[in-house]
Image: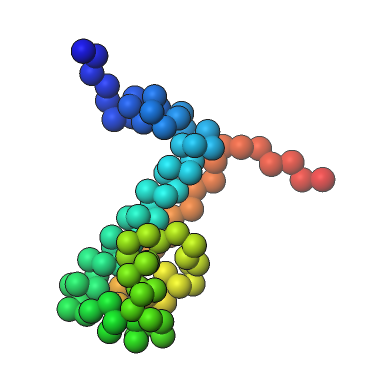
Length: 103
C-alpha cells in the first residue's frame, strides 16, 4: 500500500491548493479553529457560555454556535468575543504574487 503525506492526501481527496473545493475546505478549517480558540479562552477565564454571552450582549445559544460552528460570523462579532475574554487578536494578511491591473 502506498503512503501519502498529509499534503498529498489533501491534494488527492480535497483538491489542489487554489481550487474552489480546497479554498472552501481551508476556510472552514480556519473557522473551526477560531471556534476552538474561543472555547479554550472562555474555559481558561472560567466563564460559562451564558456568562460570555452576557459580556458580549448575545444569548448563550449564539456563543455555542460560535464555538461549534463559526460559519456566518462577522469579524466584528469575533473581535467582541475576544475583547470580552480580554484576549489579544492578531490578523495576518498576505498579498499573493498576482499582478493587479489598474485602469
